Amino acid sequence: MKVIVASDHAGFRLKERIKQYLKRKKIDTIDLGTNSLDSVDYPDYAIKVAEKVAADKNLRGILVCGTGTGMTIAANKVKGIRAVAAYDAYSAKMSRIDNDANVLGLRGRFFPFNRVKKIIRVWLDTPFSGKDRHKKRIEKIADYESRG
Ligand code: RB5
Image (cartoon, rainbow, N blue to C red; front, side, top):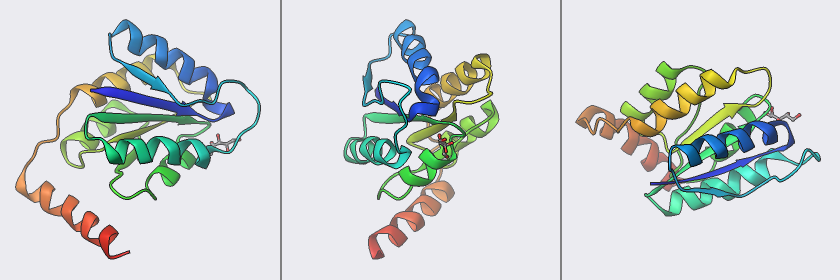
């Protein structure tokens, strides 16, 4: 599994720390920017990452903005993306078990790095349960998307 990361200016510092953390964990990372604290628009980065993740089952996305919400909202507009904004390890874990989330949105501002590490660890390590009832629910989302 490879992880694509991106952020806006508000998430830039955290994205850089996340890259170092993933490197230490020997997880391959692709960085799609941004590369500075200059103001940019989070949808440009969210959609770039989401399109890549939607096209390749071996990819997961991690997106960081000030709150984690803008990135997640934008990523979820891309067909095939199930993005979660997670602020605790339980939500991150359940987003994998029940929802097979393929993009993780994180909050870059006022959020302790220890919690970020825990969220990422559990989110990357937890598999989708594959249970029929959860598959059925995910298929309902996919059906709705394909009607659009
Ligand atoms: C940028 O100021 C901020 O709005 C953005 O990083 C994010 O929090 C949006 O959801």
